[in-house]
Length: 358
Image 1 (cartoon, rainbow, N blue to C red):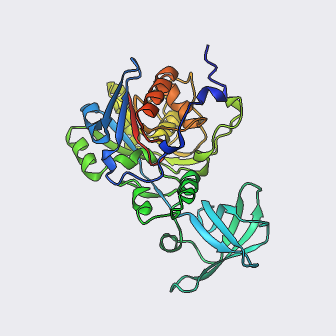
Image 2: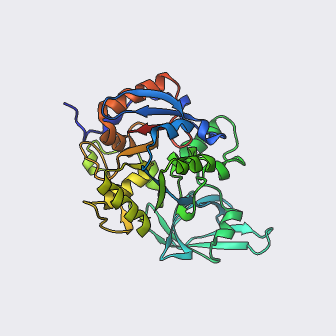
């Protein structure tokens, strides 16, 4: 009997060299493993072959959240270095942000300095820590951090494991390609601090081909927060706390999905973020809410109400995402597929290869 609530149930052997740290520069040329959730059958393809697994009248749902350049370097008044990761605007204000801070002995009422005096119209920005919430800090900036300013001074917040791996190899933490390739081609609504990475494999050309087959593409927005990198630490999954993430579902998208479900057509979710939004809010040909926040944690034996097929990357051991795909496609099917993936050198996580679960 499998204990679905035990953390170790979601463990498997993953060699470090299979965790991708560079993007696929030809987005739709990555590997694609298809997994039939009813039979467990696995096929090896490339991502552009996804078109052969989508049916006319399918609904493909994408997350159009855009990653903001949320990582900012600062100095303490002692001259020491600090790093700020912007999490959320507080009360939707561009000068007040909930943040994570990396640096020694930084506390409430301290002021950090962002010295961009060499850049016209930016200058020196003071970052005052007005509240210390232990894990996060509320920071008041002396100048609103508009999209234009963040584009100039901020870095794309790559996952910590990518930064660490690059450092180990003696590589630069960031390269010129990250800004382009850690972003989906259809990203529109700013707010994520991690990319909804299952969409990274789509090109504009592939999306147009999909549309031409009579497949409807629609969008939801879920802003991915830092909790996406939080592994399951509690032995009992029921004790794991998921952080709230903001979402919105356009009325048009809701209507498309409701009508498709009534007609018995498939809802194909691009990514676990889309799946979380739809499963959180869809219920019996209706949506509970069209905007808000969700902390839904999906694991076996959860039964999906809305999503019929799922495009997603390969996930890491002890991750909430591995628990979710196990619920969707069957635990044994997933663990067998992941064993095959390791044997065939598939790449895992954000910059890794893709799966199609159907």
